[in-house]
Length: 182
Image 1 (cartoon, rainbow, N blue to C red):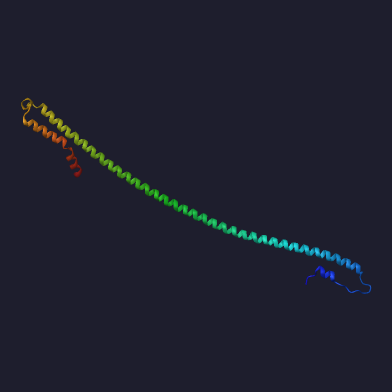
Image 2 (tube, rainbow, N blue to C red):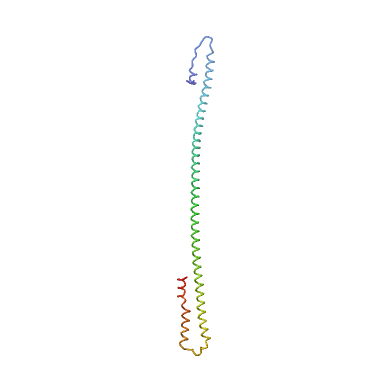
């Protein structure tokens, strides 16, 4: 059992002949009691300080564990965000490639259509030129004919003119035939 200041204060010594001076012993014991009380108070203060420091250490250890877990969670979240961003970028890139391919195909289709239209227009122009040339040649032949004066107003002249006019203005039927066969 630990010795307390009260134990020291209440301690009684038996007296003997030629023993110690009682007043001196009591005075020394009082001094020991005071010193012992101071030591006990200081010891309690240190125990409280140690307990406080231990509580702080426990708090900071707990905080360190929490921070470590938070860092791990943040790293995992950052990695997930990074992976999702990469997946999204890949999807966007694939979509853009598909759209570019579709636009290229559409442009090629329009180009082919325009080329066909140009070819058809050139055929129509050439047909028109040919018919016009035939009409002009027929008219020139009629004008250069020596029988001009003798046949003016006779039905054969009208027949030649009708045939030439029909040939010149029958453009749509020839174009349809060429489109069907060409």
